[in-house]
Image: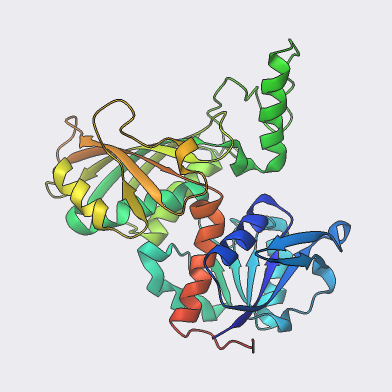
Length: 342
């Protein structure tokens, strides 16, 4: 079955990554529509061997699309996703706007693919936060094996998670420091070059940031509402690739060797775990890959039935674009939609 697909926010980091992944995975697109703001009308975007010209989001007829992949932020999703859904396109939204809506499934295909069937209530499916997506892919097989009680996670999130301007700020500050220019923060609250910032998104009344709240709430919705999770989310001077240090407490005993074997067999994961110099994966090595990498698997002796590990993933891929495309593939493979493409 071929489908017509629209990409909203096609000129942004995630939108362009979506187009690249659709091509790489030979997605059965009869026709693809690149949509953006009026300022980008006519701009050419690569789609495999094809070139798409950007169309105006405000005048596009979503009745032409079977699936609409939104990668344009919460305000755009709030206004246009319901309109696209009402026109008959199944919306897969990368923003946070619909994630906690009880009538909108929040999907990570390796974890809760069957929940995608619930899209029909609003014709919308939500993509989780980038840091949540890679985490739950690693948690799911371990939870099935020994039942996770508590998660303590510290993230090391790249600047691409904050957009192109944030990446440019890291580049310009780094370059400027070498010629004695004083770094001037704009996208971040403090200097990002040669620094780390323990602050992502806005602060909430309990002292946690919204990014940290997202990880807790989304993990509960996707995986298990009984899981307790606390997060510290940190922005680091990396262009692409999120990393996480994870400590787990289980209801039942599980050894590091058992966990290693379970994770090796799990979908979407690659285990690179040797207790030696370089026997682990870093953000630089995960860029452009589909997998979530797990390393440094070891027993946590400070709690009963405890484990710790390190995981890394390309946040523009599994954290956003890849996950959205995988959801679209579920809709097709499970025959949840009828394609209008010929």
